[in-house]
Image (tube, rainbow, N blue to C red; front, top):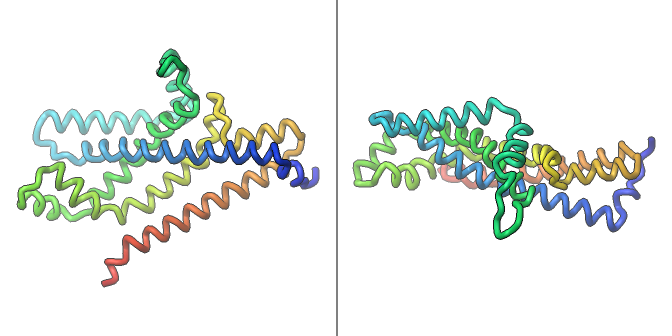
Length: 231
């Protein structure tokens, strides 16, 4: 089977691919945003001093969340969220969009991995910073958000960027709940044209360019964060 990029660069096909690519990036962005929120909360619960029963419960719940999410496949989680948890949910007299559900599902999954990233970043900051914050009258929460987390950003950013890259490629799993993201559109072209090599090579090129662009952006952000270290 020979290469034939003319099947890709037809107007209707290009519009379909652009739309589906937009969904891929959109779902990734929403999932990462939700994952960062969930992961930050879980990480804070995990590093709480176990001085009272409430902290111990929060720590246990966080560890259970991580164990369940990391111990089950993303595909299974997505199917449970869509076909069980949100099966009969109506929002403004309409069923929830599978794209919205996919973003929630990937966000819940990502939160477990982001939690470990955030926890490691928090623990990388010298313990004296927390003590200094408390000494000047800041609460534990204020010290965490205004002192510890900003300082941990340099250590958090690289693995967080890797999580974003993984999410971009993982969105293809959303096909199982009817989400027409980029790779789903590519498979549709393969099934329609019976040309396997051209659409898949094009998909590989698009994913490569996307990941490479994200890598460059991350490196620029890292350089900016590390500027103060050279002084």
